[in-house]
Image (cartoon, rainbow, N blue to C red; front, side, top):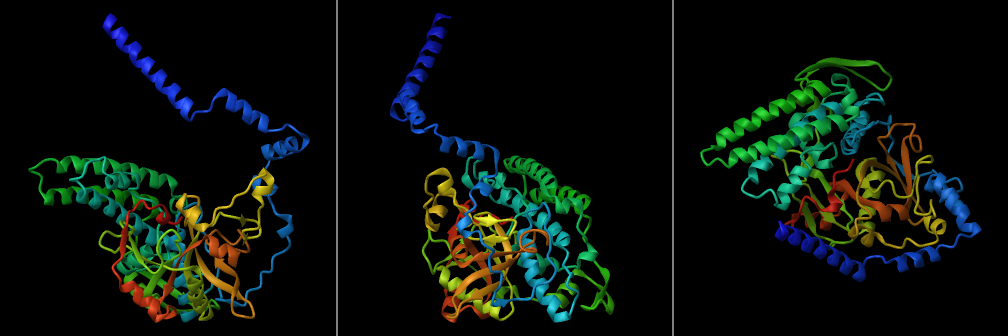
Length: 468
């Protein structure tokens, strides 16, 4: 008993001594705390700022009134845009953005009504099922690794989600086709994805553990593992069907023109509808990015950065911003929208729908500076791509240089500038990350760079989190 007591006492003493050592080497002493208290002067100015910041939205207090005049919304070059879409309370910006690029082409080519949309619910159903299969099959592929392995841990942390990339639009529509919104409309849970996503994640994590446990049995065959995986996917399919409805295999749809006049009434399958109203060769779409932390003119590939197991990881060519801007300008001048992603929340005036690095003066409000450049922000996790939108306009000066840009957003027409966001070129350079451009707008020498062997980056690279 005494021995146990002395062991416990020795352990507690050791921890106490360790804590003292840590405190002396880097912990805050009471003397230092008193110095910090002394550095904060309780004068009238600080009291007024404390009272204001305590009780108000920091953005409203930090508004830079030197920059708060009405912004010029004129743009010299725009792609005519149609009715604004709304992703509601979901992380499907990547899907809305990619499908809005294709939707704009279809509306103009077939003189469809301005409010025509491809069913996002239909594509999202297959997205979730394919991601579930991607997770389960990846668990089987990594079953020889320990649970402490970084890849295995990443898989269990990210079994599924509603965010994504343009590669999802390309892979899913190529495999499953498309249907008009009327053939599979939105549901409450497709518009509000958090709860169903939470439940599917929970089920997939459980299933992942079961598959790993089964695979430890040396007598377990690959056939049995695949059969079990399919039983698990049956449950996921049922959950998705309950939440979103079951995707149609065929449907009848009446095509109308922009005046609302009936053009035809036909029966379609999702693939025949895709072939008629989309019919895109996605191999001609290329993603470029601006990541100043990595070498330019190199191609990068992100492991597991795909929506479909039998699809392909998307590849990115890293380029300086001026070269990306020139491609974007060429596309807009040719009336072609583009998939675009950025760090949307930075310096965004949500009421005006205007993004300008001078919108808010946080430094003056707090009596300090915030001086990191784009490279420093990316390398310290302070900035990264968070949202996808459809790039559709640019304003060029007399010398052909961009001064501001415009994107079609998917937050509804009552958000931002009538559903659009306008950004200065300085903001574009600082917070834009990815752009999907068709090959005809890419200089031939740049296009050849995509032939190089990609540099593989891990799935947990912070700059390549799915856009939401």
